[in-house]
Image 1: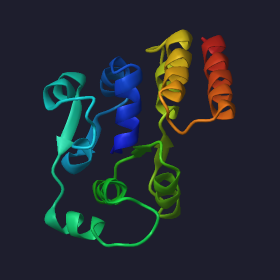
Image 2: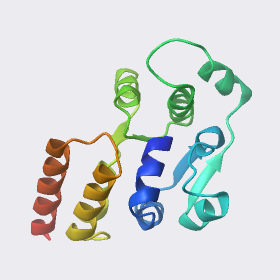
Image 3: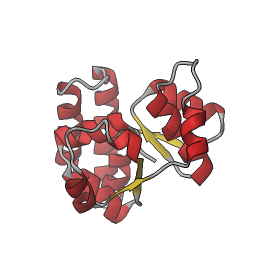
Image 4: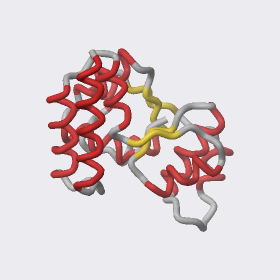
Length: 161
């Protein structure tokens, strides 16, 4: 289950990676109300990339609409649907990641999924590192230390092959 921030980051940096994820890691589900926040991809492009836009149940929308806490309504909905559908939550939002961790819902960071692609041989070291740098340059909340740590992990995975 993807939040909007991850989709926006990859849509701006290199949307082809979304397709690679769907082909080699697993389907990317996105609540339709969350997808509505992603102006960089229309529904036709989402389908071409392999994204699965799904409709939440009314009870999930209502639960997400409860005020309070650090999560936005969209992030609450992403969390709720990941919980209810027993999906991995894919996010770049620290508050959403903390909530998932606290509730024992598997969550992975936005860049982490590229490590899986590199490990499986579906993404090169240079594309992964350039994408991470572009995501940071485009304004994502990544600091230099996070990008450097990611680059070291990518390099280590590339050497193992």
